[in-house]
Image (tube, rainbow, N blue to C red; front, side, top):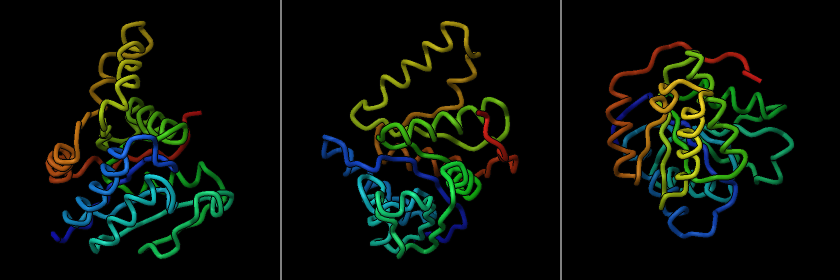
Length: 198
């Protein structure tokens, strides 16, 4: 494992989804982060893809930083054996702490919560509140409709074409590793988002 002080925030489902490839991608991501020496920052759950990525990172000796709000401690089975385990009062606090403690963002398959997290950091990037890399791991085309929606938003005049340039797409974990390696070699601007856009 390469020594690194950098961290990668992973947004992903509290469920495992219907395809084995989703869980495999989560495990492979956790293993890759540990091997590269990058700390995993995530939602601190021990269920679904969240649990898969965290357990894989831990099993490979990786550092883990989890953040969970009090009302989800039982539902998402708060994983208290992480390197760092943070409990917040609200979802907004959770997202802010995760974002502030990461150098890059990765979006694995997930549901409404993952979409909420993705669109928040994308909006902050659009407003130039941060310069952090946002990578969508498009496992078996799961995010194709999301990427098509971004195209539609631009085509219909609700955003500049630059919106799409703020999102990098990886088709598999090997490509994700290459993208992160290139980006984390040159740390992002220290500018950070400090408020919600809603």
